[in-house]
Amino acid sequence: MTGRHTAAAKLPTVTVMVLVVALALAAAYLVGQSVGNNPTSVETPSMTNSVSGSGPHSIGYVGCSNTEDAVAGYYLVPNGGLFWQPYPTGGGSLDLWTSGSSQYWSLFDQQVQKYGQPSKVWIEVCERAAAPLDLAMVRQMFAILRQRAPSATYYISPLNSYSPSNICAITGPNGVADAADLVNEAVANGLALAGPTIGPLTSQNTVSDMCHPNSAGESLLGSQLANFFGG
Image 1: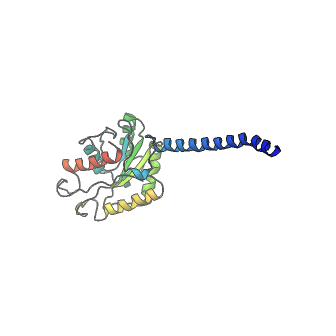
Image 2: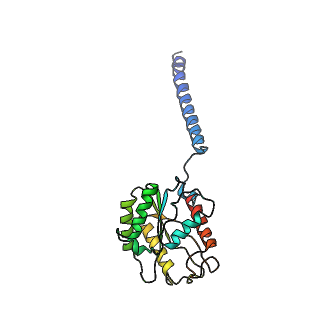
Image 3: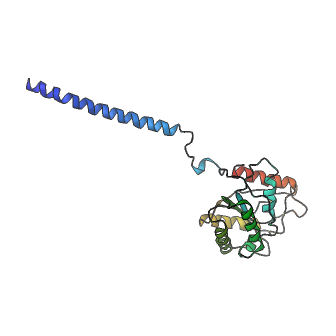
């Protein structure tokens, strides 16, 4: 009799413990299912090549004439109006962006006054054959940019590619390759995120100098910007 009473006394406690464990496992399963099926769950960067959109005219840019042409091309194709309207950066190889008193920074400042602080800035590294670039110049440009657009996310790209690679005399035979190397160094040093790799421009979509895009070339470059930056 004593043994049976002892077993009966323990039975409710054991039953409660089993129920608690079962409920905990069920809750964990439901939570896991909820997370897995959540349509707003965040994707990792490896899952997409695009950059999420921003407000109108919220993407600024630093670069040269081809950079301006690419942004002009962005407005020739379906777009979300994210970029600043093209402003005159012709001749703006990166070495000319290394002084805060440069005319190019004055023009950049005018765009900030017009549109407000950019959420993103796209930097295209343009090299002239007469003025080879180095990482110190890139760092100096970023030091000035951080003063003018301190809260923006920066994306850096080399000048658009060409096919054949040597058709643009202005850049010299190694201009695009040098720019690509500097972009890789800048990204590796945490100065910016990798931006779009655009091009190639060919004899069919450039003007007579084989460097600057014609309207077809502008549209090509612009569509590549739209694809990368999300509209």
